[in-house]
Amino acid sequence: MDDLFEQLEKRIYAVLQAHERLQTMNQHLRHDKSMIAEDHEQLLMKHKNAVMQIEKMVARLKSIEGLS
Image 1 (cartoon, rainbow, N blue to C red):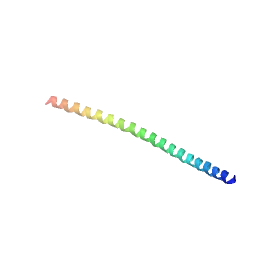
Image 2: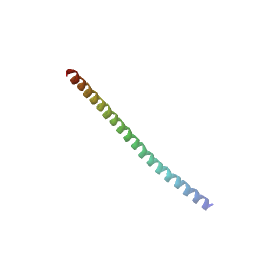
Image 3: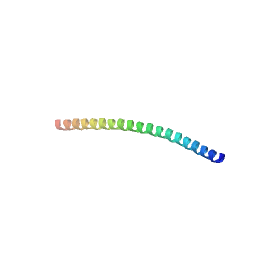
Image 4: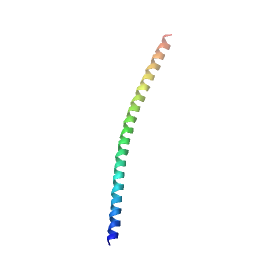
């Protein structure tokens, strides 16, 4: 009977360790996901700014072309 309890105790301990590892991994993944989302937003803003600058340059070139 003592062997059965020892085996059960070992299994419970192993499950608790696995739970802690998974919980830590989940926290890291959530943090990484948050960082990726922030990077994505920054890249979108940079892309929008680049598009606006290109559109302004094209408009300037067209106006210069029209003056010639």
